[in-house]
Amino acid sequence: MNKYILPIVVVVLVAGGIILNNALKEDTKLADCGSVTIANMNWSSAQAIAEIDKIILTHGYECDVELVPGDTVPTFTSMNEKGEPDVAPELWSNSLRAPLDAAKEEGRLISTGNVFSQGGEEGWFIPEATLAANPELKTWEDVIARPDLFPNPENPERGALIGCPAGWACQYINQNLYKAYDMEAKGWDLIDPGSSAGLDALISKAVNDGTNLVTYYWAPTAILGKLPMYMLEPNATHDSDEWASCTAVADCADPKPNAWGFSAVETVVTDNFSEEASVAMDYISTRDFDNATMNSLLAWMAENQATGEEGAIYYLENNEDNWSAWVSEAVKDRVLEAL
Image (cartoon, rainbow, N blue to C red; front, side, top):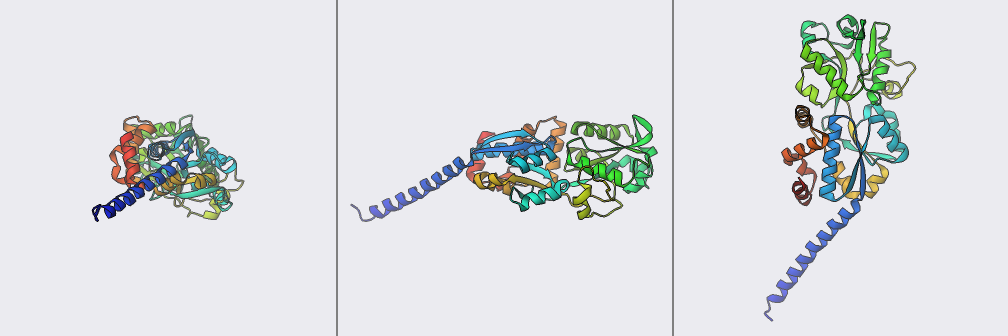
């Protein structure tokens, strides 16, 4: 045998063994992913993110993924008490700060970080046209003093503050702020818009008709990306202790004036998921979205009346440079092939 052949054969066999070993390791990891349940919240950004996670975990990591209906408070409660679903992709955690911190400290739930890298934005908004016509309306109390400018269609003698749909954590926050600022006595009604679609419709109608409206809203969202709205300045500073003990608590007896602070929007997972779904946990811990990209996606979804799944596919097809940084080359290729 040629003296050079044996070393070459050895090198080839070793290299082949390494490649095969790495492939087997990857297959083992993929097999370890198992079943994953993801909360599919009832607003557009959360639905798009849940579907993005589903596509990447299903096709990139061969997980068995199920989306389950969710909402902020019911999903948190179920995860905290029952350990399911496994993942809440977009949890606006300021509204759940005290119980969420307790769940983290006791090891039931784990935050993988902020799903929006720049945080969320929450507050009370009026159309910019309303501000242009009434430039003195800069703060919450400026608006609270003028219920006549924001009449309740059902009772025009009183003003209407549009709050959050039932089941959203911000419902409690708006109820407590309404009470803290004594808005009922000052001529205001707090209105439940019924749903996310109902809230969007009220805002769109006010802006398009040139009528006045004061409403809770948040970003990143398609509405604030498309429509000219002004976020009112709170007259109080954010008191985190009051927030945790009362402002964000249902039926707080004696809420004090307060304001939204930095809005942490976290991905939260159960302890069992973090221990058992290694590759899925690695992915979930890595991915996040900047607000500009998400606003753009949500605007596209709104304009095209797209579902969360359609939004996810649009995002993955048009933002490969972003999401490919979250995964390996092999995972990226499998996702692209699936699209």
